[in-house]
Length: 149
Image (cartoon, rainbow, N blue to C red):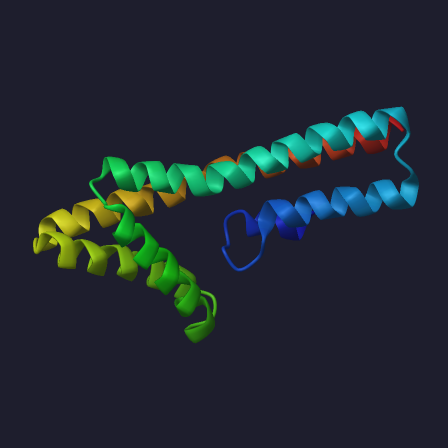
């Protein structure tokens, strides 16, 4: 779970899915029982909400910042390429570069392109903080489950 919580901030590790999987393994090993079923249901709902926010918050911030959907798609594609080309930081570099290049091509204005890119970066930052908070909440629910069961 600790690695998963760190993964909510470090994009190399699938944070919330890893925290959720750790809770599942605990439940399978220790048994769920009534408390476990309730706790795991809450853990699942929190993890799903966090994963959703991880996609929705940057998208919303990018749109508010003026980024067009094709620029966001290019950012996503270059993030995937960057992940494999430059380990650890390539995901971030590729995503930012993709949005910026897409907006440069679309608008021809570097200032507007950077404004949209900066909004996207802020959206990812806010999403990371939200996912960290949700990851910590999942750990708290799991700890309660362990203590009560």
